[in-house]
Length: 65
Image 1 (cartoon, rainbow, N blue to C red):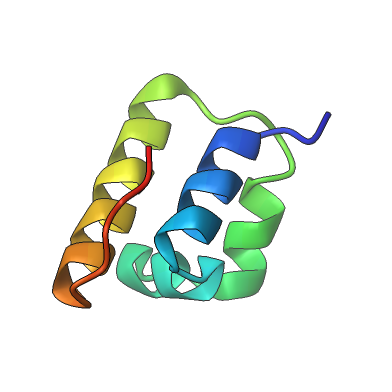
Image 2: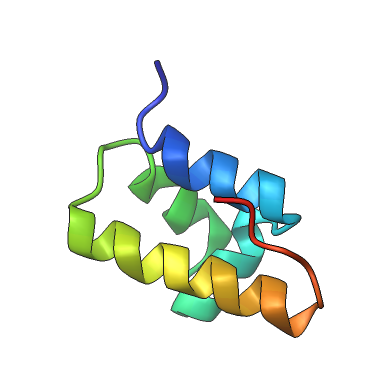
């Protein structure tokens, strides 16, 4: 099973690309991909979930949790 699968699936189901999350975190998309290779702490996951929700809302998309 892939680590951080919940984050990856939430972004995919919400129509948000991982590079968009990285941009909002103000990091390179390659750095974000590397970050996702290891399981993230729950507080960091919560921050990323909030970013995905914000991005989806800005685009008029529904977050599918």
